[in-house]
Length: 319
Image 1 (cartoon, one colour):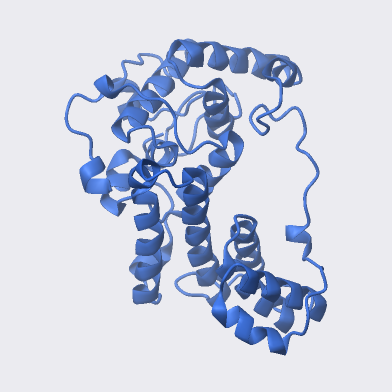
Image 2 (cartoon, rainbow, N blue to C red; image 1 turned 120 degrees about the horizontal axis):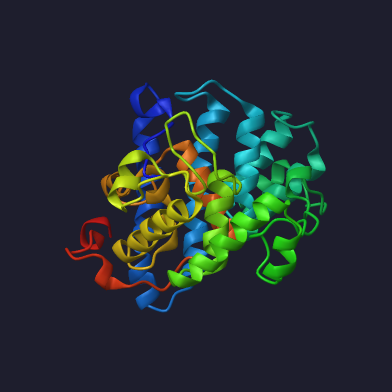
């Protein structure tokens, strides 16, 4: 969408800036060096998950303590749980204290002990030291961490094993036609269909006449500047809109050398914001957006055509 949208008021308020800045720099540094990590044959998928989890923990802490935002323990708990599912030790540690104190959860010493033990198992020394206050783990988890049932088959992007023909057949007729067109045009643009479908689902839920309060239009939610940039004369013409969105995604993949996370962040917030923050910008909407589509696509890298970006890529600056 290439649009600047909601950001945490903490960026301009009295939140603990030093702590927030250090946490963000750590998370964005890890994400920003994905190419180096790939070159060293380290698991990029795990690196991407760690980066996202670190960002979620920072946001959760702000909501837990009311730093720059209205305190919301339920929101903090949800964010910590999201980060814990990515294997973040700090998230388990924070959840253990919340459950142990009955903050945002019903107080449950068994669950608190299990969470603290998991934080310790993930290498957090302070969790190991705190375990004596909680007792032995009891193999009990809060509802947010109980394994979920398999996703419904009518989600066109959620399972790597799902057959796309069967999945798309379960969509309503009007959305099925749009999704099939996205899939077809993705192949023409050499974009993996699952990524293109994930993007379209997140942007508009395959609604060809969708329009956001910020004037993002159509299936791929193009703002006027992006539509003009990729020669889309009528953003509500389905084919033109999808072509424009896929062309922009292709360009972003080239610009960020196949880094899916950075390309998605830029599609949502603009490449200027990604370059400025040297990674995923600390905007709540953008973090949620990247997390959602990454969860659907589940691949941190994608093939790209370097010739689409004539000038030097910003990777030297970003990374």
